[in-house]
Amino acid sequence: MSQNRNLRVIGVMAKFWQPGEVKTRLANSLNSARTATLRDITSDSGKPVLGGFTDPMAVSAEIHRRFVCHLLTRLAGVGEIRQLVGSPVDRLADFQAALVEQSIQGWQVTDQGTGDLGRRMKRWFEHLLFRPVDDSDSEDSGVSQNHTLPVADRQDRAMSCVLIGADCPLLSQDEMDQAWKSLETHDLVLGPADDGGYYLIGLRGSADLEKSRTSGVTQESLAGLFEGIAWSTPDVFEQTLAAAERSSLSVGILPTRHDVDTAEDLVRLAGTIAREFPEESVLLDGLFD
Figure 1: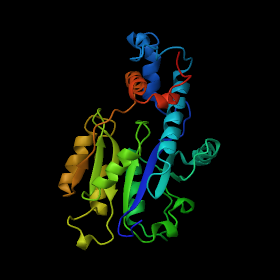
Figure 2: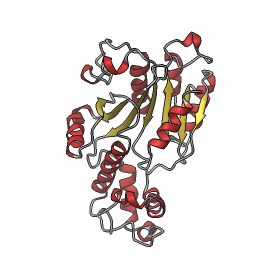
Figure 3: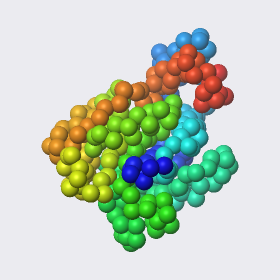
């Protein structure tokens, strides 16, 4: 591996799969589906997708667990540094135990910290791109010293960091490679979601900004990408683009993907799996009649 190339880091943000604490929007839509028109929706294969569950909160939590573990397995060989960026902090040991139970290797488990989504994402990038290896983390840093990157892994090299959530479980190494390829010529890369948000964000660090063709990502421009954004609204992607433009950051755009946030999204995913990825049917096996 060339020492001239940035170190490639991937993070997967995930809440622990406690029923009632994760994917509640999906749970509520599944609950409505029992008595509303969604009850009879089927996948393209004709197999009923919704119905037969007893507790929508438990079903949505199990779906989230499967999505997280599936992504960690699919992306186990991606990049040089892989982090499961978990929440809450008191469930990090449970994340670690789940990885062992599922025989998922090669992932560090780190803490998201506190605050809104933007603050937690900003913290992850800030820690990787700007903090020295031996920096002592503050109480609110969200990354304990036990979970910092090993000196041998960092080698004082610049990093290209990509962060995703767990709402697009079919993401693969190809999409990650596209993101890192884009970061070779752009400061920022975004993967837009069809609901107006984004499923992926990546930033390129530079060891020597004076030699960069652009101004590069600074702590000020990093803050602008995550502060003042109307999270969980259809405006997130456009607001992030506007923030990048204000900071003169060059932006690469990946293909648009669908998040799984509602029962209708789940139906779409089931149809996609049936048509294009039958080998991924384990994602939904046994959850529905």
